[in-house]
Image 1: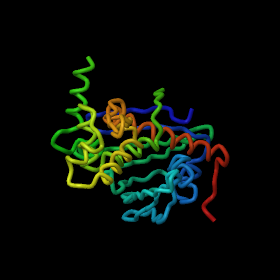
Image 2: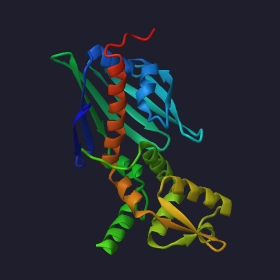
Image 3: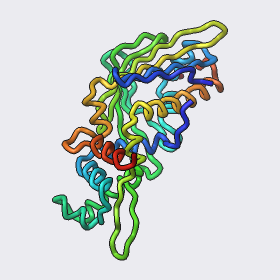
Image 4: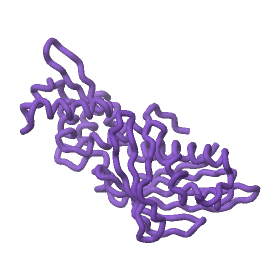
Length: 153
Length: 117
């Protein structure tokens, strides 16, 4: 089992995911540091990612696009905040449709040739979360959903 | 272990679909009542074709379903998808679980990859 735990806290709008791999910390790091390897896991097989720019330094940017089955491309970016190879990195990520998320990655070597990776993803504000799920308008979807719920219960 | 039938590309399509205010409005309206595409196109300052295109984007994201009735195309909001979209952290979890599965697969092939050549 790759993912060992997931903790979601709606109050702080944070998801903390912990995964463990049979690999060294340096090996795990390479999957972030090497754009060709990053492409292999970032997008799902139906929407493969192509990394355009990969400047993994504080203040640097990573830009990419994913290509859908119909050939439609959607671009995305990371704004790199901190990088400490191979212990982790922090970046903001977003795309034209989505407000930025903060991602913090911690890589810790464990005994017996294993490495733990903790990924903490945060919606910077409730607004961002609302915008993302399309509630940033007068008659919000939340209203619609609660109305539907009222009808169904 | 959370098992959900939502695929990440679907999630992606949902976010993309909801990023547009006309499309959000169409979802909210069609959750309440069934609308024909022509009735919807009278609500917005745009052509029938443009509204039809918005409906197609929503349909791909499973936010609405369309059925034919004579010469009309009737549009209904999909409550399940809207509810799922509201469960944002759950969606995020699915995306990252899939990513970590692929991450693990790559490391299983080559546990100690060297620096890029």
